[in-house]
Length: 480
Image 1 (cartoon, rainbow, N blue to C red):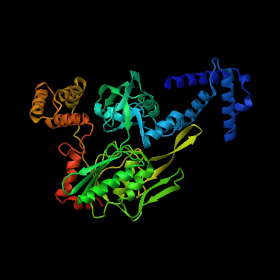
Image 2: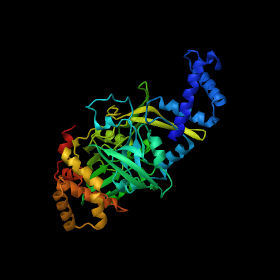
Image 3: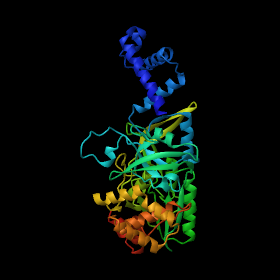
Image 4: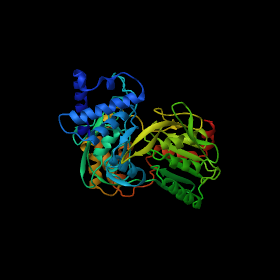
């Protein structure tokens, strides 16, 4: 797709240059500087016909039309506003309602102006021109390979991915199940790794749930689809039957989805007030979604909401609503920061996705490019340069994956021996981190991995301690 577009636009540029050299080729009235909309449309029409009739090679009207339509949206410098071909429209429907063939990860492109080069650029700023992994989908090839939220895609099938839009990258990553695609990523700390992923049928998950202990329910919402509300209601019924007294809701790694879906779920938790509102370019309120009185999670059930940098879009709407209303205590990391709303419109066989408004939390905050900060920040410790080198070495040598392959069942004695060997071989990572990486690798080999892992999940462990030690009310009151 990318090479075809490049050819088309090189051709368009060449024609425009020729047109200015030989001014008689196109009537000057069509290229006049009149600024009204009709004149611009007339100019485009004249250019379209001229290229169609005079380009050195035959070019189809559809090819020119799609190139022009894509150019309109690219000029907005907004990664979320794009022209959608008929195939794109089908793919978009798959990711929100069904299944598709691919590697199983949600990706996005940073918006705004490209930062000027300086030695002080952050990791994300350095890779501004590359597509970012928002989150892998649990159980998919990307998840099982170890791709993580925050990775940037450097190349696909050996070709640099610099300058790709998220749609262009997604178009290459998707394909017939059973076929392979090579993917090179870079991770914070400068760690790079190449994966060969075998495409599979990707089922879009919604939610999983379980009891953390005898009194605390755990609900992990993985995607906002038309089916999320039903899954959350099933979870609420399950928790009620188990006589739960507290609840942890986990939206870490949830990249978003349907606005209607998160509003439905928030309405199951909040019994009054605004959930979210959307406003246009003039700050005029387009829509305001308010909670009804009927709820599925009783008001006396304290809630902790877990967030991270992979919590985006609709997940941030839930986080903002529960934080601003004081209904939940947020634990984890600052969210991704996507506070814009897109409309998907069909346009013949094709369509487009256009940012038409921004959403605002109940306290009237827009978090676009900022994110929502948790009440309590809990994340993995920052690694030193020596530790990053050790982590890169483990990844490049595939040491942990080989150990898990050779020892299909977890065995504490063998794990202890492996950790000791790694330390003897010069790996300077803490024992806990090596063991955590081993556990994650075991989980990736399972078709149905555990719903949670209290042993190595620091944010989840902290949340449960709040309930067990009766610290929740004090923690929540301290931030009101």
